[in-house]
Length: 343
Image (cartoon, rainbow, N blue to C red; front, side, top):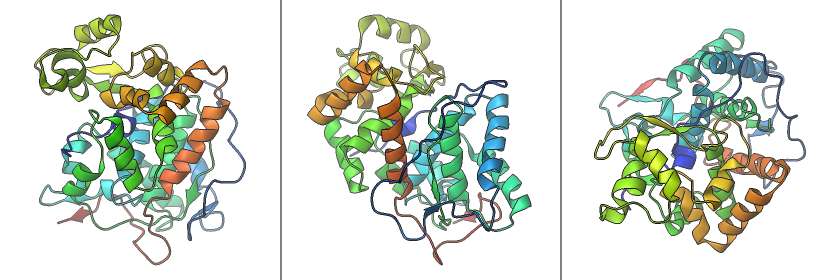
């Protein structure tokens, strides 16, 4: 399977909606965490060694989002990139002297958040030197990006340590492109130990944010299946709007387009309504309608009057992803800065 660009769900450059003065959104999602626990991970892992770390991350995230509201959700994408490649170990932060690291992969195109992760890490290091991993900072920042766009503030397990390896080929092989069909999507997720529900719930991240035209325009607007046509499943009125924004034949078109055209800055059920009405942005979004289980979830969320079920499911799916191939205990390291160099 050719790997080109990261699945929008995980792929997209998302955008948050919090503004200075906005009251804190919904209360934290509580209750016991799902699934089997991972040795070395725990909610409140830093309660004794760095008790203020979650408050510090949230404070920095507030400042970051207040300055540029698009960066918050970009950090949600950042966690997807980190966890789906070599697990949640901050390997996405490593720099390759030979330009062959995860940062250099085609699938990392347009990824933002490197400087902001370092900003948060520096603040935490000043209070708790060599204590909190970059991997945990990425996970906490992703949670707060959701929270600051009116989503849930779910419990986050911490205790991860940072990896020392970053390889371009891992990213390009492990991250499904936005043109993926439902069989490919489920295969990519199952290889990582994630199921169909994780797929359809994490895809709901597209309820906030923006994507560049180059990540979808060819597949959806101008060259569907290599035939020089528009995707026939795409709503024609919506397609016309997208054509006004995205120039045909421009390979590196960086023009940003809202993921959810109705409420692009609010973490809500808009994404599922878009998928159901054929106004989602990516082929991989529309592919959710090609499986009985994912389609049923899309239909239920599109008709839901409350975000309660989605928020609870999202907390579970993020917990599942946050446990992927983690390094704990004596494995990995705690770095002073996140962007160390590797070969």
